Image (cartoon, rainbow, N blue to C red; front, side, top):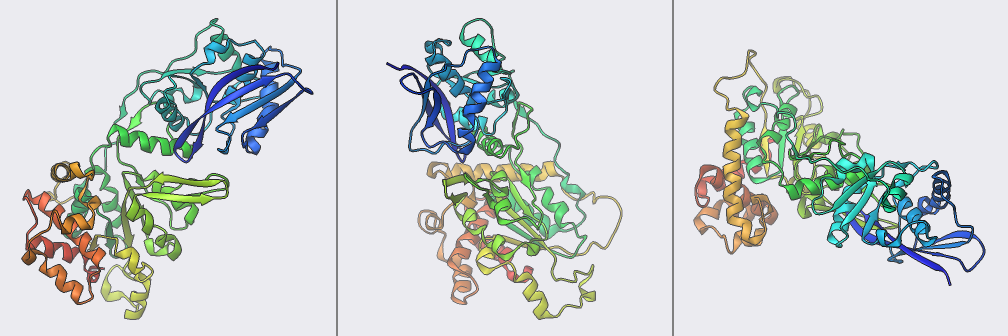
Length: 503
């Protein structure tokens, strides 16, 4: 009868982890090692890594038939993070490791041929899945110990080699433990008062930050479009712990999580280059698709500078994430979903020649329309605010009358608090998340207030989606003003910011 043992690891599908039970059976056939349970090529190669690591750690490798079954058997297993769990399962079945010590213990890590445990991607979402499944103890590579320490409610250990893990399982030595960490304050945000002039664009930025709205800035080069967009992060509230963990999980899967052991609470600001491909923006890759820029900007800002230089297909691919707050990527090995609830900030020149002053423009009206026409109507319909930036006509220091980031941020946070108090029982956080049907029924405004919207719709100048988005902006203007509901003037202001002539 074959000797049996079990260990635990975690398989990743996007940012969702699935606990995997590894069963090892030794005996009953020709010597060899067999993996079942839909392993991919890198996992099949683990047979050689595991055997070499065990032998070089001074342990005997069983010269018998070894069968390793990974359950659930219908879930494809990818990556090298199962190595440590496979090695311990084999040694437990051989009687080298106490099987009872493996119960309820998740083992993560890739094994080097000499027995060292190497870092793997996605440790944080793996631990979140282990905690949700009720597995209370986890062993991770020492290099991932700070990352693992971000998850509460787990007994986390870090190991540098297979020998360390085997000694710990035998009760002969301790493993490293994570040091307590907190939130990372991050660098001070850029100061809004440094932006010279541009009162209309500054106001649009404030409204965008207060309501979570998408924004388009159009103006000649050197007017401060990029400078202004970079300052929106300083106006946004800090991430909650749940949002910070979700963002950290995405970064962990992408391999971009800083090894500091602190949970970043500053909203992300992601600015991909205009030569970025659709895979870089949305996510992609062979096998299981990895997250892209839209997911790295989750609960923060995605800034597309020189947006008309992006491919039209790339820009239009943003339409679904903008509406749904997530991106779904289908590949041959499965479909994964990544969170992508971000604020989109676009910046563009008014025409191809882009002179410092409109009087020097040599582009015809047709060329100008065609240039900004690269931003498709369906995409622009999802952009709530459009602001024109004018040439700067004076040098000198910052304007002393310009409001600082701290002053504007207080208004933004107060407006966000008002919106959250209004929408919280419905599960929405910001005005931008409130669905149109709710704004037209339970939170309907008087007919006289919304008449400008109806007039624009009848004239064919505004779609139903555009009207809903204008309503959301009107609610944000009301929150910034401290009123209980928008009036007609606020609806007119919301329409002003949607006017295509602003571009």
